[in-house]
Image 1 (cartoon, one colour):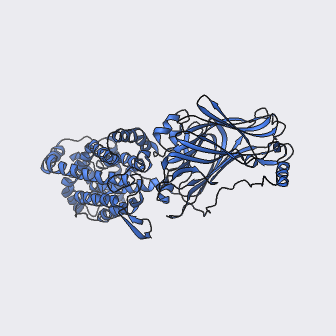
Image 2 (cartoon, rainbow, N blue to C red):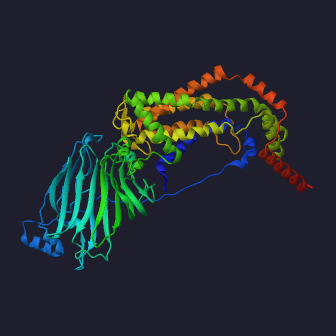
Image 3 (cartoon, rainbow, N blue to C red):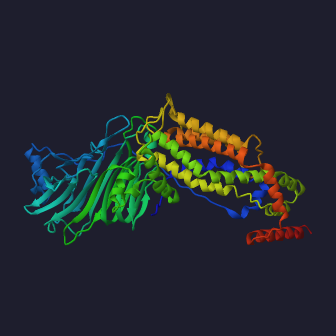
Length: 617
């Protein structure tokens, strides 16, 4: 699987987590000279952003005609030519099972209401994915008598029947006794997926096959969560294309794309999705996403406006396309049932290895724990087990810190001895490291190994459907922010409320940093001011996590408490500075053989030193 665009707001969280680990790197690089000595190893960069103002107006609906006015009806039938054979008739037909309610209109033959029967919004009203004209679906085509029509303007004749236990609705826009355009819906019991077929019969002399026929699907995402900005971060147009590659349009700004061989289109609305899927891929699709959210607004009703335009090919002058509609939860436990369509890939697990860990480790692991534990307790238990599993990494990191601490006096002495010769200082520093069997970068590796875990969990809590509207202590919904006080005003980036879990998580990480870095944090050239970072990172967590899932803040709070405990045990009962010092002295006494990299680095430094001497002459 592949993603062409990385979720920018998720990257903000990634950067925040990465920043929290900077102080760990600091402890393993005590001086600027050490960093310079290892400087032949790393580099990175990236950027992109843009925005445009969009109005919150309903998706354009077909113009209604007065069916009581015979002149208006006659004019309508005249305007649509052969399709005037179908007598105009307002009305709707309902398809429903235990999970979903669909209402299909005679005019346009399209779904005008899609309601979840088992879910409510944050303010206890039913979850609607389609309602009050927020969506439209239709075919645009031309006829042999030079008319340009849209199926949204045509009247369809409904016919409801049964196929075993399945409900079947046939909607036909007729152009003659045996000439018609048909939308066929088939709903199964206890299933969110509805089979949908578009076909025509006898229209090869009515529809102009030399002109393109396009399917156009529009939808404005209806707000379901108490924070529209937070919901909007996880609201995106996602699609499967070119042999199961996965990509998304931007979540923070207007975006558009054209792709080929599209298998499904997902209009994701955080915890719920509207998906149009096909096993035989669309030849191509023009995709548009418009962001409708600029700031936190309690009265705003929509998040994004999506549009997809897909050309459909005629075969023998007729249309025939088998598809599926999915209106339901963005829940891996549900979407995994449609493995042949790959709909579970529309869930934002994260990119690369982070998403793999989230999907195949944390999601099933948490589902197992929450099957017999309260949801909040399951988070605590999962956190404890994750931290214990990572304790060897914590040990390695602390051991590296202890070794560097023991060597620091000798590093300082070298710095004083060669303070006027940076190159010589680097050479001697590397020799010392080689003799002692210590690498200044060795402590960074354990910290980096934790990054996939941290980021996977950063994506897990806000997107896990299992946490939706599950309470714990004072938090009403672990998938959204907790509130202990409502503010009479809005603070930029912070919000109009105070969440307690981010405060607890910030305090815990502050004390962890205090414990591991202490007050002795000298500022060095080329190095960040670690004392400043010690205060900045908890502050950033306090601000940005105030609007994030309370389950995520609960995890970080418990995780930091456990890590503090593990570090105290390592420091007081496992590691002994005197033994480490003795071992380093033993290592220094042993003859050391240079590896190729060390030899190359030494030779480069010696050459540079020699050239410097020649230059002085």
